Image (cartoon, rainbow over all chains, first blue to last red; front, side, top):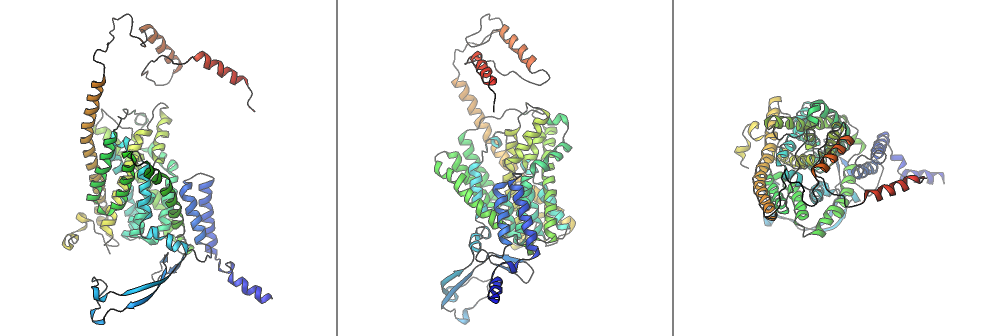
Length: 423
Length: 134
């Protein structure tokens, strides 16, 4: 009887627990605490933390993971059992790089596909489906009116991408490869779906750490940005009042969606999926005749995908791959990226005021150029009110804020197009 | 893209090795920032141009909607049109606002007659204030 009990114990998960798993339970617990008790990006941190917890339990039928010979953990793959119906003739076999001719194609009948739940759900990230679809929802939720009313704030959105490129160099100096550096740098854009999209294309082995850093810092925007904003601005600059924004017509908003999509896709085709979905969502919203579709994009689609995206990211945080010195470096580089992006926006706003002193912008809205919508714009508003209680910067800050979303997608397109073929 | 183009040095097309040299990396970053500025700058230019048309159209529509025989009050007019405060009343309101907002920056943008009775509201406020909230 005792032997039976011991045998049974061997089939349970207790014997598979390692100290690294326990550490990861602590990490998941910390993320859950930040999300639930502190309210930091709970919609994303809760699924991510939960996914991390699942990844570090001895589960069966949830996800398949395997250590590759190069030391990289590969997750979310499944086995396909198939029967070969016709063999290619030996004389027609070609190298894998050459396209297969009809006679050397192999026909198989798929009999069984074996994999865990997240082997299939995580394909949404692997196949780059989730981030663009989330952008559809983001587009449906975003009002580009403030940006269209004051298009010069596009420059602030562009300037706030400074952190991406500075961090790229920092990461490179710390020993990361170019592809990994780009994936880490994109954290500075403060745009989760774009960070995941880029990282999955260039350095999927860093996905867990990059996503956690991106979403954690997005939630910490109210703590990271204000000291940098205060450091780079004078009291007088913080009190600058900006002219009221003009009302933007529906037609103008529709034209905007098309113009942005066409220009961005022409310039960086690798960002097409993100930009096209963002602008499709926005076009649906602004055309005002597709209410049901807008409602679905703003609610059901984005909510369901957020759950799947968050847990799929969390489930990549297996102890063996996450508890590495690289993770710590990524966390540090993430702050650097955020800091430089904030500084870039504020400094370019100051330059704009020197060039056009008759119609100044409050430099505090420059920091909103990092995407984190609408958190970064709210930070500009709160900081502005600290120095002038009757100065309302929120709508002005929304301009660079949504410009930052477009800027980050363009930067991601640049990274992908220039690095995907590099060594 | 043509292989010959990709073979050009990194500062032009940004193709980087796995571990680029310092200056190679800087050139790559400058290119990247330039691409972002060009993309967003181009959209800015297009939207600014389109905005000029829409601003003009709005102005034209506003002017067309204005009544042609609107009475423009002059400084000499003794009785202002209906709904407009007399100069004396405007002065009293300005003084009251200045007193209330003392120490703060403010700007009076409009003076409009109240459409409700503040006496009734004050009465309600006093009644509610007299109850003890448990």
